[in-house]
Length: 300
Image 1: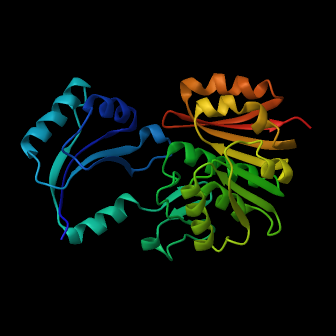
Image 2: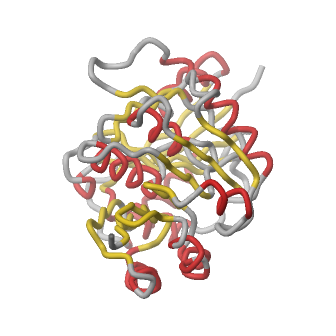
Image 3: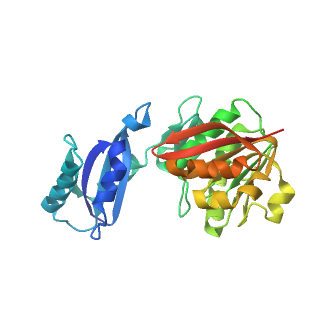
């Protein structure tokens, strides 16, 4: 029977990243995670919990003192600290709470343990990220989902490319908003991610609508042949996005949209400049938790 122990501290989101940096390495733990426990309309006002998990009893007093010391150094006066034991039967429940369903625009992302809980009017996405990136909880993925929802309210896209698809969550979100006969491609350099995306598409009844394929660059022959696309999604990282600016921009049809994410706030200007030089115009910038999502449009 698996047993786990935990120690955790609560704080506001602006303090979360600096706290994690000061926390540094936690060699005796098996996981360090943070999650939102009190959502707010403004993400910066949300209430967060940083949790450290152990598979053997830790020195609880020392760990609490360590967290309290970091909190004090940051000027956090009201940061509750707690710790305890998580027996096996509680661990499943605990995991389900941490992985509770989330809303991103009209999209409702949930795990198998929350099946049947979709709110009226929401667009459900059952997700098993497995070994691929893309649970919807990352601020970059969340920003992309908001962008897809926003764009779909004003335009019916006939073709979409999700480049660097990871779990396939963005391709599936696009499929929920597009006509049944629309072209949907989900591409990734990682074969494991492609298989995860295929499985998620099947779980959501979208297996016949989304083509999942391996592609290591935007100008891969299969992508050139299928495009250009009305909507291109690329949630990667700032460096690769800048290097691929020319080829990724060429996959966007005239008048089409390109959604870029995976860039920190201070990387925004350099990434945007690379795509502006390719003739794309900024339509919207979505900021969440220090990460930016750019919604660009190619000139007609």
